[in-house]
Image (cartoon, rainbow, N blue to C red; front, side):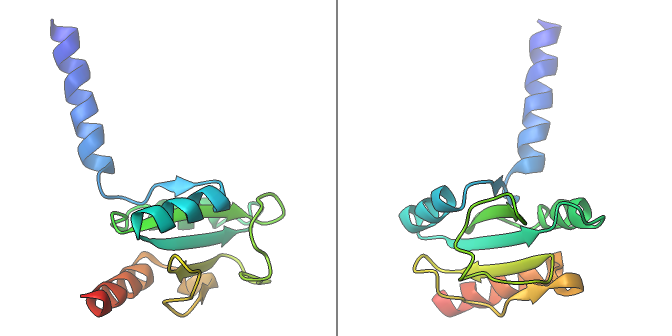
Length: 130
């Protein structure tokens, strides 16, 4: 019985910790379909897996409230995505688009890719949609 209670407690704590946070997908097409189906914005993060700051950037952005977005993490040279739409030579790069893949915020690059910048973008577009 104690084991069941302990396991349930751990699950509850993990659920509370994860609830509302950005959950990264690895497939652009599936993420785009989900964004269309749910009416959410698509957050596209392009990273260079060889760069030292990649894991830090991803970890920090994961803390942003992700209830209104579908997020996809794309690794340079590894993942499939519409490169002509998100072409960049600067990493990390963050794009926020609507279901029709129209940019709703100015793209962010390098040091400008921060949780606060993403929050400001999402707050602004949420206010415009109201």
